[in-house]
Image (cartoon, rainbow, N blue to C red; front, side, top):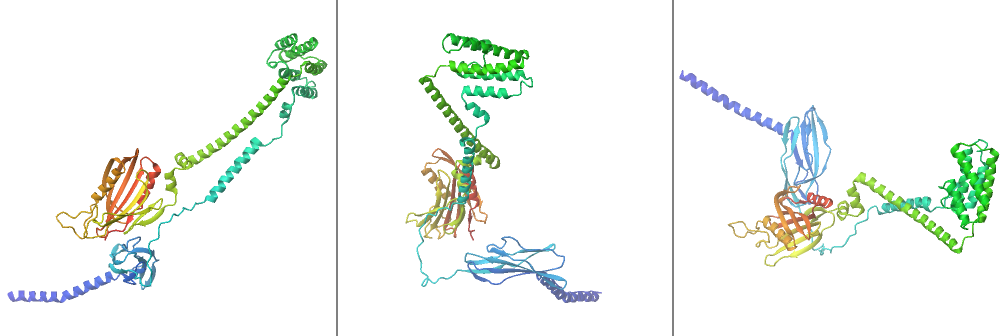
Length: 561
């Protein structure tokens, strides 16, 4: 019994020793096959700054597998400058897919291309990370001369589309001038009514009677219209030459007035003329208001009588004196001046209406506040819409976009501290302002302002930068410039490319203005460089706030290693 048990135990151990190498071989083979589906390689492991390397990913897949390659900037710290199309090679029943990328780096050093994720069907695979050496370009200083940095020069911003703007303005002026000439200054031909209105009162009355004689009123038995125009002709003449209320007076009032003028020797009218006019005016009243129909021949005789009596009235009028002639001339000049002023006011009103119409049209399309600021040349709006400058400032560089180029200011602090601050600025803290500063510790055994050693340690060769102390120094600078009511908040901040720092922001008052500020603090170069970006802008000013937000959104730094 014991012997049988020992035999079984021996056979079992022997079987295990035989199968174990088989299982190990199968596991290795399976692993090799799986990893063999995705491979990666580069054409060079050592390049110069800015030189391109080709990164290749090779995938073996079935005809029904969906393969997803990396997209975007997933190769950092190297930069992808080009993504090539996928090459497909058919191998038996499967496919071999080859995807290539062009990569580069502009700083020297040793870099690793990170693992890349490739999805094949429902499975995910990762490539190996690859090492790349980026070398500096060696310069032979014995053959290449070194020169000082050239001084700053003023560069005028090119005026954009000035010719098009000028042509539009000239076209508008020409159109307005043509309209003004056509409607206000052009000598227009007179109409028939205007020609008649310019005739003297006597000629106008005679012309009216002549037209009445040629009219078909009597043939059509239109006596009311006939006598209306007949009395209007005589009343108009009397109104202008004898009695200035002749048109609105009744027949009795007009005749009584003529008799009073005759009795006062103001006009030498005969009693027969007055009687004839009274008879005709009363007969006209009967026709107009009582629907009387006189004989046709009597109506013709009345027109002839009025024609004759107008001559008598003209003869009875006294000759105007020199004073009256002068008054008439002054009256004429005054009328001309009134007409000229009327044209000027009409022209001004038309131009004003045209401008208002343009303002309303642009206001409805772009907003009235924008049009107003554009019209009155809001300085912040002009900066916002101008040509912005994308540049790098300081070493290591701070990449930032600003409406104007920042001007450089170098500061050497106390020699015992051995620090150097390079500042690039635009504007001031009393208005829209941007400042980029880089403080470099030129003596690693010393510590620049804003830099403190770690507690319990001696001063290190690379002291730790105290961002809070640096921020307090900036706040002290605000106070030195007269700022009051300084409110401060602090938050951690990370730039779009991953550089971490501190954001100190808030408000303050200076020179009667309420201002916003945002200060960004970063460390670089193994804690030996302090980088500061300060933006200030007035509160409650739309375009200044938009400019500040755009500047803040553009900040990028080299991510610390």
